Structures are given as C-alpha cells and as structure tokens.
Image 1 (spheres, rainbow, N blue to C red):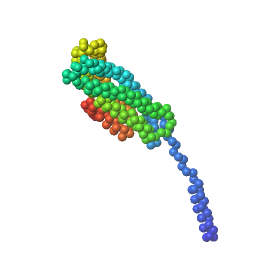
Image 2: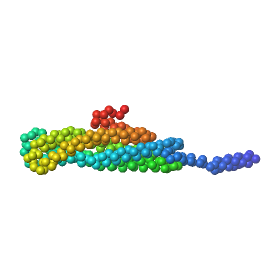
Image 3: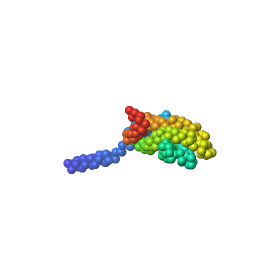
Length: 282
C-alpha cells in the first residue's frame, strides 16, 4: 500500500512538471508604432521633427545658394586688379615704377589681390557642397516625416542626423575662416592700395602710355568703386550666414544632435567669430 502511494505521488509530480514545461512563453512586446515625425525613445513615442524644422533647413539651404549666386559677381573685384596688371605691362609704367616707391609694391599688391579673388572663387564652389549636404540632411528629415508607423529608435536617428549636421557644418566653418583670412581681410587692405596705385599710374602714364593706357584708365575709377562696394556688402555675409545656419540647426533639431556635434558647432562658431573679433557665443 505504501509503495502504491509513493508511485502515485511520483506520477503526480511528473505530470505537474510536464504541465509547467508546456506553459506558453510570454509574447514578445509589440514594436512601438509612432506617428510621422516621432521616434521610439525607450518604448515611448517622442516628437523630434516638425514641418517647421524641415522648412528651416530648406530656408538655410536657399540662403547658401543665394550667397553662392552673389559670388557670380566676383569679376567686379577682379576688374581693378586687371587694370593695374595691364598698366604694369606698359613701358611708361615700368620707367615710372623704377623711381616711385608706391608703384614698386604693385607686384606684391596684384599677387595678394589675385590670391584673394582665387579664394573667393573656391568659396563659391564650396558653398555648392554645403548646399548639397544640407539637402542630404533635409532628405533624412523628410524620411522621418513620412515614415508613419516606423520603429526607428531615437539613438539610431540621432547618429544619422548628427553625422549629416557634422558633414555640413565642419567644412563650412573651415571655408568661412579661410575666406575671411585669405580673401576678405587682404582685399579690404589691398583694394585701397590698388586704388592709390591706379590713381598715380593713370595720372602719370596715361598721356605717355598711348591708347592702351587711356583705355585702361578710362573706367578705372568706376571699376574701383564697384569693387569696393561689392566687398563692403559681402564681407560680413559669410560669418552671419554660418552663425545663422549653425544656430538654426541646433534650435530646430536639438534632440537629434548629439553632444559631440553640438560641441563641434560651438567651437566652430567661436573660431569664426574670433576672426572678426566678435564676442563668442554665450
């Protein structure tokens, strides 16, 4: 009787164990489905992109394109340099320059001014690249605005957007700094020298230099005035635009820019502002 009871207990325990093993595993948690413009942040949908943010990036891209278009007029800056360079080839100028200290620096002035113009042309080309990178960033944001129900994680999207922002801002800052140092600053100084030398040359060699000297001097004052006006209008634009682009991206895409990229933006702004002796970003 005792043996039978033990058998019954053992069989019962085995049956219970079998039932426990057969219990279904808990179902996996359903993936989070977020509306357009939102991502999954630890199981909760959070809004990270709005139509206003996309429009702001589009606007900054347009402003980059406008500045590039303005640099189509760089020939205006080149014109008085070409006049001075033409005067330097005239025999009457060469004789005059041998005894005039101001005229002797013409070679240096022309070389520096030509390098500055070359830098402006390179800046124009680089603006096209910045515009393309902002277009890539806009494309990333557009995907977030139409991927309704997607399960993209905040961390994943932050990595992608931060990479796009860094790709746009880092070279843009370097290009603005190069333009200030190697174009705007030297041109601001050298255009005055060009004007002074051309005035001296035209007053001295126009009569003895023949028709070529007369042709070069005829429009010299107009060319110098246009060049000076262009530079006065242009010189603050690169820095102002860079600051606006950087601040807009930080303000509109705050959650999607990682700490490292924010630090890069702040450092780039400080560097660019320092070149114009502007106060650093608070």
